[in-house]
Image (cartoon, rainbow over all chains, first blue to last red; front, side, top):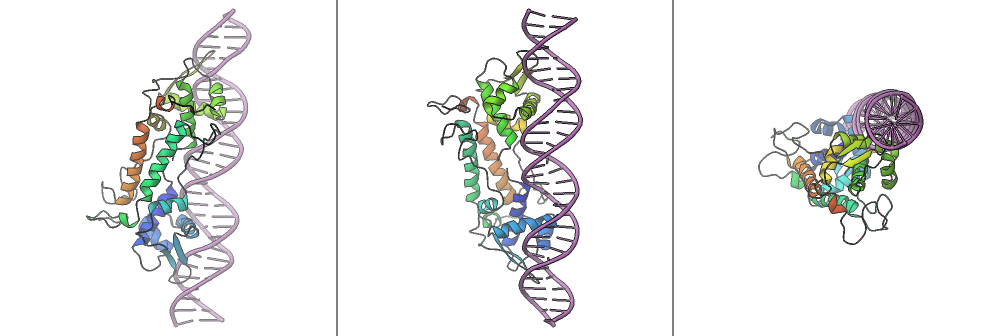
Length: 137
Length: 137
DNA sequence: GGACAAATGGACGTCTATATCCAGATAAGC
DNA sequence: GCTTATCTGGATATAGACGTCCATTTGTCC
């Protein structure tokens, strides 16, 4: 469905949503349980995609660019690895129109996009009774 | 969303749906535009999963086990590579309950399963006006 | 039983996702 | 300007997905 890397990116973003000051790769890695070396690469990707802003040197780290109530899950997914759509038949058949097979596949992808496009990061943090992401409680 | 191998499996199954006699790997490969050597592996998988039945020797090949109006897209997907669900939090947090992040991911997976579970192979072949899968028209 | 057709299984090759490690660049604080 | 903290970029390693190839097994037809 979504790759391991995308899952990592979502965890990191959820963590950053609550933080005011920049958080280092090491700090993010610890809370999110992501291999620190690999997280560095993931964060670079998010940085280039404009999801986070990085600051080097002492007291540096990463902050979200957008507010968490504007940033959607879909934006994060698209920054890492967009969901595969079917703009046309992979076999190059029936012109621009899709056959029912690939139409169905595309339709499912669309559904997923819609679902994630409607969910902001804040939606997943402001939960009434406990069970916040990354938290034990 | 779904892997290349799963897409291959779906193409092969769609092709077999219309055929009464067994079709060889070579015949399937040609119509579906799948590398013949790799298709052989895919077909073995479908065979072991009980989606197709194989017959060796002259006039051998593959046939669907179930009728195409009973066989769903989901069954084929599950035979090759099931859609990843989230029975529990990957971080091992909050007991059996899912946090909103993984709940959302699982919900999307569920949606996709539902969509594909409701679609039979026949649904994709009996189309009123043209654009059948694997066909030019 | 012999000739041929076709699936099966194993060995192997390649590419990408995942992951590690480290030298270099850059920023802050003194 | 020096030291320290931190991101950046490149090289490298590993596993799995995708793909090829071939010898073997199993089946049909004569």
